[in-house]
Structure formats: C-alpha cells, structure tokens
Image (cartoon, rainbow, N blue to C red; front, side, top):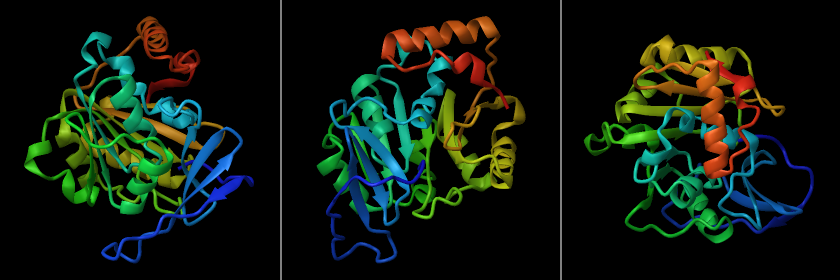
Length: 265
C-alpha cells in the first residue's frame, strides 16, 4: 500500500467466484505509462510493477522490505524460505522466487488478488518452490508446519482504506516471531509516522524485544519499513556500508542510500 494514482488506463476488474466472501473489495488494475498498479476498490495503490521488468521491485518501500538481506550471508540466501503475508501485486513473492531463488510462500485472503496477480502481474503458477495459499494469515501462521521455518517474513497487510495494518497486535507479532528460524527476520510496512506507527512498533517490541528492532526513515509517500530479528544482531557503520554494497552488486537493489537512512529503532 502506498499512494493514490493520478489517472491512467484502468483494466476491467476480475469478478468474484460464487464462494468468495462478499465483503472482500473488488480488485482492479490501472496502467500509468510503463507502470501497472493494483487497487482494492479505491484509488489507493496496493502494489505496482514495471511492465517491461515484471520481476524487479518498482516501489521504493517494497525495495526496503528486502532490508533483511543486509544481515544474511549472500551465499546462503538461495534455498532459504521467504514468506509474504498479503500478496499485493506479488512484487516481494516474485523477487524472492525468481531473483533470490528462494523457496517462497505467500498467504492471501482475497482470491481476486491472486487471480489478478496471475493474469496481470506475471506471477508464475505454483510449483515445488512457489506456493500461494488462500487463507486468513492470522490463522494460517499458527499452524505447526510453519513454525521455525521462515527466514524472511514480509508483512504488508492493509485493507482497501489503507488506514492501519489489518493485523497489528502483540499476539500477532509473537506468532510471526514463532515462524522465524533462529536468524530469521520480519519486515513490516507501516504507513505514516503517526500514533498508529508508534503503537505498532511498541507491539512488535513486546514480541521481539527492543534490541531486535531496526527501521528505515519514511519514504516520501510516508511508508516506514521496520525490521524485527528473531535473534538480535548488530551492524556497525562499516559493516552496514559493506552489506549495502554487496546487496546492490549481487541483486541490483538500489541500496546506496541505505546506510544513511537505516538503523536501530
């Protein structure tokens, strides 16, 4: 979730199947030049893709959701397990699967979102290392088979009004922590530096501990990406600079400014 669009061509929304819960918002797609946007019944952008580069990450805040890479040995990334809660336009799922070559799981409540991602956002079909599960994330992540299996957990759960995270309790973040491997990391998109942001960070700290918390400064649009580590680890200035350079060189993420805008919460 990022911002409102300004015009552009809009594609016809996909229709709900008969068994879809009626309260779920209608999904639509708009093209603004070379960039395609996903919407949930409003002008708010819930995800974007550069049409000619569908497996790159277009939005700045989504690029920052990859901040967990700063703490990982690059040689170990391929074959690890990434999980995304809230599919959006599938940018994180596609990047982890295609670029990072990770086992990748996404959990999405709205079947329309999955259908649109497959039709309009180049999301590959499920296979041995890619899986999209249609479920309530709050319930799915409690299942025993997921506990301790996730190395990189991305949480971007906003409804169509984009007012506050849909799941944002200390209990939920504790469930997220339980998903992680010992060196696993959760990244969360928080929209805006308001009282809602402060409350969200406090709840994360209750689950992870304040020494496990890191954050990026807000983007121009107001998105703040927060990281929480299962096992707290520090990076000094030199190590952060070196890690940023490595991530950019290996995966072509624009990390040049990260050492200046990223640090302990």
